[in-house]
Amino acid sequence: MTGPASPGPASGPLAGLVPEDATSDWVGRWAPAFLRPYLRLARADRPIGSWLLLIPCWWSTAMALRIGMSEGAALPGYALALLALFALGSVAMRGAGCTWNDILDRDIDGKVERTRGRPLPSGQVGLVGAFLFLGIQALVGLAVLLCLPPFAIGVALSSLGVVAIYPLMKRIIWIPQLVLGLAFSWGALMGFAALLERLPASAFLLYAGSILWVVGYDTIYAHQDREDDALVGVKSSARLFERNTHPWLAGFYAGAVGLFALALWSAGSGLFAWGGLALFALQLGWQVRRLDIDDRALCLRLFRSNRDAGLLLFAGMMLDLMPL
Image (cartoon, rainbow, N blue to C red; front, side, top):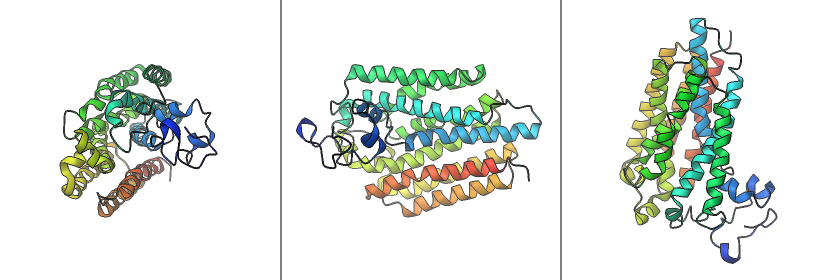
């Protein structure tokens, strides 16, 4: 791999495998050379995935706080510290999930233009090293998990089956994004499990809405690989919907907003939370209007903009907790 001061493409056996912009992120610029392939295996250079895994955790924490306040319950003193704990856990588990995904997909990734420069198919990381790195990240996630109450630990552990099978779904079903949604939305249950030690109706409504949101934004993301996926025989919602993506995307997003509205109503949320949901809905509507499935760069920008949409809703939920 090129060093942090090398602006040009890689040469030698990695030529054409390492992206030309490999030094444009913090990993390429600042990380020690021996760590760079592992950090890229965990997608540390692309934090958007950690954000999208974290945001449902933060939503559920804010909503659980709202319910606890309305019930007059004595909430744990670590309620706000839980936001930081979830952030650490999201980074570790997203990295572990990406590593597991790349272990299973190493042959497919070598045939796809966007992914053939990943550490495993390009030979920058060996299979044994990838498994060891996976174990290290899992241990960090376990350390975070052990800070939670027993009920929350049980809820978190029950997600492992879905997480483990997701990378295989693109070989089996036409909407593997649905299984990704089941896994990536699990945080929508975790705030309730950690603070209330139960799962009220609003938790399941928030979880269901998040699943639809994930299916929507990952369909946008999948349009970057639509042609390559067809060549290697990988299924995706982008291939299934193709030219009909706009109405499907609008439907997924509308369903997400509707379920989030029911969750807010069930939790007794106030004006600021509803304002956050309105901004969230407007941002999703902008994505639908702007989407051009043949513009890969635009698809990536719209996909990444979901972090901002999610944070707008979270900000509204947090403001809703403030005394007027």
